[in-house]
Picture 1 (cartoon, helix red, strand yellow):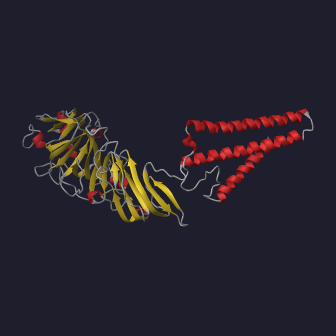
Picture 2 (cartoon, rainbow, N blue to C red):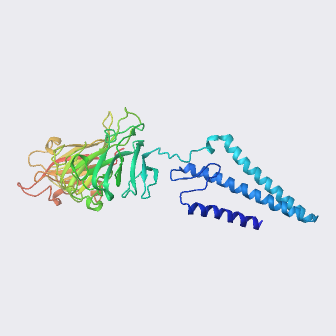
Picture 3 (cartoon, one colour):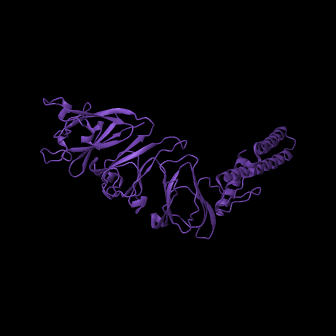
Length: 444
């Protein structure tokens, strides 16, 4: 038995060494071979045939050696018995090999007749590449490649399903340099996407040396150029679905020039989606000049809902969701007070203004939202009672401050805005809280 195992190992090493010596010139077995175009399923079929061939050779070798043992036994019963056992074992092995083939063939004959030369590309970009030796091979590009080896000589088609791809950038030089072309379509750029959508395109990749994919993911995408274009593909676009207190931490400080939204996909066209909104600040820690964006903004220098903060100024960002529905939902409230400590430590008249936290953002002038406040009444403290965030904007310079439950040390009361010089300065000429934005936090 040890001799047989030794011979089997030697035979296997010979075949494998031939494979490596020939690189892609695999030995042909039962009409099957492997090339650079062979699919993973093709490899499985090839090595199944290889195992069948090796097994058949091993059975033949066992029969030959057992026959020799039988003929040279010279009538000795132990040797004759051992030779018969080897012959029986060889026939059992042969039956196992034939049975495995017959079982697979009976389940599905196509399992044993896969075209080894056919590359399938169910999702991605199907191309033909040529290496430096002039050999051509099919390839399926399914992810970002900073340096494409060889030359792409043919593009057979694009196919991405399930709202997977937002856009792709094709560049003439490695590392996303040189001349770069953005490839997308209206549906891949839309706010929402149905699952049955498939991205197809006929743009050629000939001459392309690097490719960057941007995948659809719910949130906001910030670009370092206007009209949702990128100047430096190594850093842009950046996508966010949560707050970033310092954009320098993600390498995007003072770079945003346009903003685009992608909402979670819906199961049907009639379903009302969850939407995203963003507040951009020109200073870290959610302060400084701010702008509210609820729709795609191709140029952050153009006024939207509020005064824009401009291009190349964003340093922190608040990202929130709004759940569209036919009925407004109250999630809690925010109460504004005209004195400190939410009216708890003042002997003067306490005026308060209660504003609802809804399942969507609201904004406006404090004087319009709070008729209780008269001339000379200013917001000096507030309480947050529910999953809401509050942005207060001062009357001078357009400076903003953001607050939520994490801004409050204890309880629900933020005791004094007098510590925030960007939105409150003592005296008749000093800046005072003028307008606000209330947004849902953790909206479901």
